[in-house]
Amino acid sequence: MHWSVLLFPNQGADAVESLTRELSSSGFSCVTEVSFTPGERLLCTLKIPTHDPNGKHLEQRLECKVLVMRVEPQGADGTFGLACQIEDYHFN
Image (cartoon, rainbow, N blue to C red; front, side, top):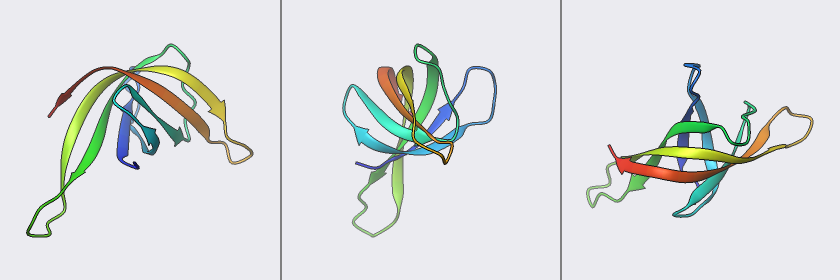
């Protein structure tokens, strides 16, 4: 599943936007233009698309506390593969 995700670094920096590559009940992976550090804890918001019988575009927001498990450079374009474990979550 490919859901939009906003990552909020603890340093008060701007949110980092990405798209999930893999997603499960315990975590997700994505690609970002920002390198995070394994062991770093982040807040994030997953935007979950929902079905509306009237055809409207709706979404639920799942707010999560995540632990950065792995960071891998993706090549010459300066992006990083990021794997996160979900530690806690709630719908907003």
